[in-house]
Length: 71
Image 1 (tube, rainbow, N blue to C red):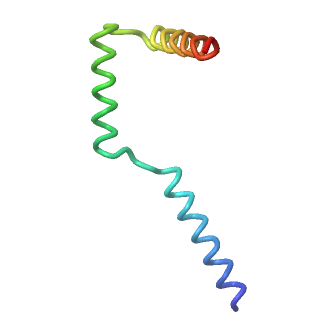
Image 2: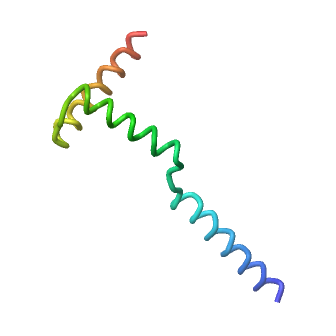
C-alpha cells in the first residue's frame, strides 16, 4: 500500500514539474517588453519579411560573436 502511494505521489510531482516548466505563460511585463521591442524594430527596419528579419538577426549575432572573440 505504501509503495503504491509513493508511486502516485511521485507521478503527481513529476506531472506538476512538467506542467510548471513547459506551460509557463508570459507575464504582463514580459508581454509589454516584447511588444516594445517589436515596435522599436519596426521603426528602425520597417516592415521586414520573416527571411529578412532572420538574416538580419543572424548577421547581428555573427558580428557580436566576432567582437567577443577579438577581446
